Amino acid sequence: MAVNRDKPSRWKRDIAQSVDMYNDWFMKFAPKAFRETRIQTTKDVEAALYSTGNLTNIQPTTIRKHPEILPTLRMSTCPPLAVDRLIGLAGVSTNIVKCMELEKKLPARMSVAAADPDIFVWLSRKNQPATETEIHRAATIVADRLCGAVANPIIRNAQEKRQLAAIKAWLEARSYKQLPGGDGVKYE
Image (cartoon, rainbow, N blue to C red; front, side, top):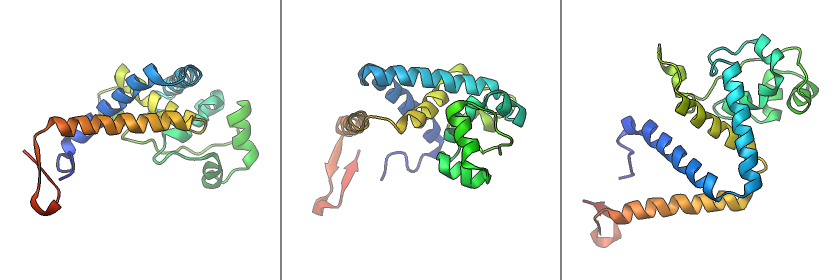
């Protein structure tokens, strides 16, 4: 049986723990230039979250006032939107979106995208605002998406190795037996 496949009540907590584990690893081992870029991008995402009331109040006036939030909004959707995909979905000219993304100029109009509820967990709660930890965690996820286009493959490979090592250590720490006939592993 797959780990937690039958325990959906633990999924959100497990995802948050995984994000926090990655953030801790990343800040210790990623190259300095990339860390600095990610730190600044996380601050930019947090500023975008602040200007949109943590994505609870995305208005055309907000986007006109803060055109720099467009990359954050694109990467906050489920799934994240590439620039070309946003242009197609919004039915706007390439110049409007690229000008907004690169030059921070005000577009004439912009459609509102749906935010990813697994990243912005507070959006589905009533009368319970986002915590600082949730805001920062969401900001780091979106910042990673924004930095991902220029991410060094060595960092991604190192992260994958770290994840596999953590899973291997967890499995080896458990008592298990190989089932007869090579039919898999039984955990006790």
